[in-house]
Image (cartoon, rainbow, N blue to C red):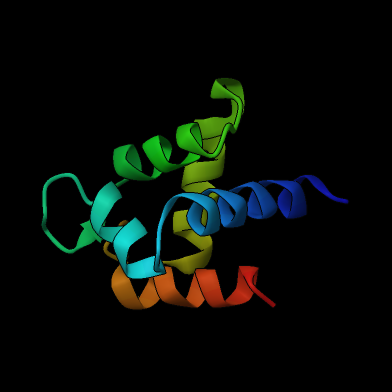
Length: 89
């Protein structure tokens, strides 16, 4: 399994084991309630998914780069859902 696949699997395990729905997970990590996940909120998600602190910042940046379709440097619900759908395949 590649590093990317391993990371995505850990995120999937976190969400399915600790939250009833992806919406609940999104709301939990959206600490400021602005309906988007900032890089610091994504890092917290990665920390909870047991992603090493050494690579957490890089992974958070890559997730934003890969899923931020509107270019605001944050992940909104639609972008988060697209990522979850991809992970769940």
